[in-house]
Amino acid sequence: MKILGIESSCDETAASVVENGRTVKSNVIASSLEEHKLYGGVVPEIASRRHAESISAVVKEALLQAECSVKDIDAVAVTYAPGLIGSLLVGVNFAKGLACAAGKPLVPVHHLRAHIASNYLTSDLEPPFLCLIVSGGHSHIVGVNGYTDYIIIGRTRDDAAGEALDKAGRVMGLPYPGGISIDKISPGGNAEKYSFTHPKIDGAPYDFSFSGLKTAVINIVHNASQKGEELNIADLAASFQKNVVECLVNNFEKAAVNSEYGKAALAGGVSANSLLRAESKKMCARHGLSLYLPELKYCGDNAAMTASQGYYEYLSGTEAGYSLNAYATMPIDNVIF
Ligand code: KG4
Ligand code: ZN
Image 1 (cartoon, protein in one colour):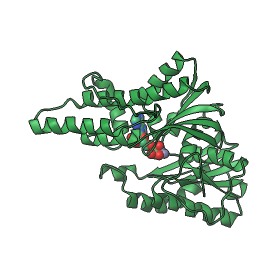
Image 2: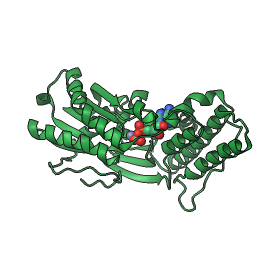
Image 3: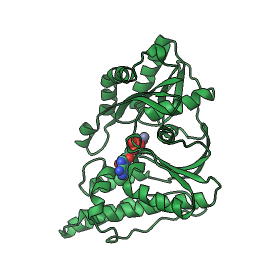
Image 4: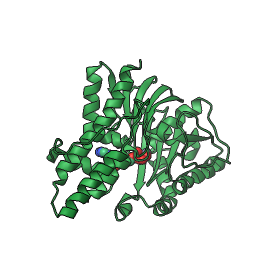
């Protein structure tokens, strides 16, 4: 079964054809990232304009590279939540038009479920497993009990890990996205130079909080500039990254030890982080758990993961009508459409 996936939740316009949820036939991405760099973050209006301009060509190219036409597609899967509403609407409306014109089923896909599915594209991973989802907008520890069955074990109380890394990178004067910049310069810095307090949330041992760490790094930068002191940015980046990764892996470890999953996976843009990947490997080795990591090309936003999850959603009977709407927020474990 061939699924055409369409993704436009943030600043990537993406389309992909995936066979039987696992075999990627094409994976096309047009990004407006370079333009957003000028502003130090994603400008929603620019992102939706660029989606509208490029979606037609991106979908055409995905079909071309997969050597098929829309007639050969079994269903159109589209990210409908969560994300930037103006961006999501471009993909949703395009998918609705295409599904209607071609007489194909329309399958709504939750973006975080799709990030989890990025693991299905390069390994034989099957539920049940434990997943740490870390992206620009979300940080969750989720039990993936089935392809469309999830239980939230932990979540962030404030900023997502990616958001904290991006804001910290910005205050350090690094190019957007800060998460990638911090990952790049950290190996050249001393990660022990600065220490940060790890937040503890009473009664919620698996929940995260990153706003305190973010504020601490902002204060370090502001204090130094007020005193006219020059900071070693590589030291600060390395220390900050180390602490963010410790917070993530500590809770992931607690959740893994206190559950019976036996298999663990990472997902989301921040899962490309080299320290997070290395520390997760060590943690899983300590406890005899199998660790699954998405290939780097599937960590960030792409439509192959949307098509993969779309396949499993379709098999479970998920199909939307042409009244399908987009939603800026939506829980992973209880979707409506
Ligand atoms: O999943 P994603 O592409 O978009 C959302 O759904 O949010 O995640 C984007 C986030 C950004 O915060 C970016 O800084 C972060 O992923 N990111 C990284 C790395 N690559 C991307 N963070 C740390 N290290 C990386 N190598
Ligand atoms: Zn994403």
